[in-house]
Length: 96
Image (tube, rainbow, N blue to C red; front, side, top):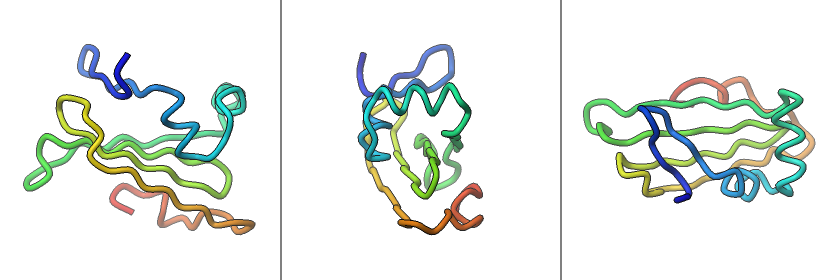
């Protein structure tokens, strides 16, 4: 599997990419996802960003974001870690 693929109109991302981005081990990622403690947001680009998709993952005080094109190629990665502080509400909104 490529790191990001489209299947029947849905995006699938390799779990190891998310784990690395959030700075956690793969087994921890799986456990936290099953517990509902890792959440995500998927956005489709419009206008100047047409053909791009932004996937954002949230866990505790961390946010990991990946921007991909229509072929699934990763164009950009970014991560924020707020240390002991919780994620600000603004980081959980589309475009935030």
